[in-house]
Amino acid sequence: MEAEAQALGVSAEFVFVQANGEQLRHVAELIDAGQLTVTIAQTFSLDGVMNAFDISTQGRVRGKLVMTF
Image (cartoon, rainbow, N blue to C red; front, side, top):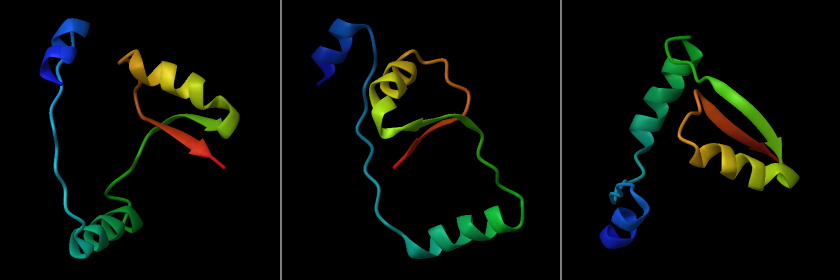
């Protein structure tokens, strides 16, 4: 993976996460209290998935790209 990333001029890292219900509840509380907000850059239907992917690879998205079904 590292060689492929270097060939493309990007960096890559593995991130391992573990589900944690207590942390998720805390995040939900922050959202409910208005202390945590998420900026949505654009919303796409399933037909727009390739457009969303292209936008995400440009590295200039400010906010989240949301897929609706």
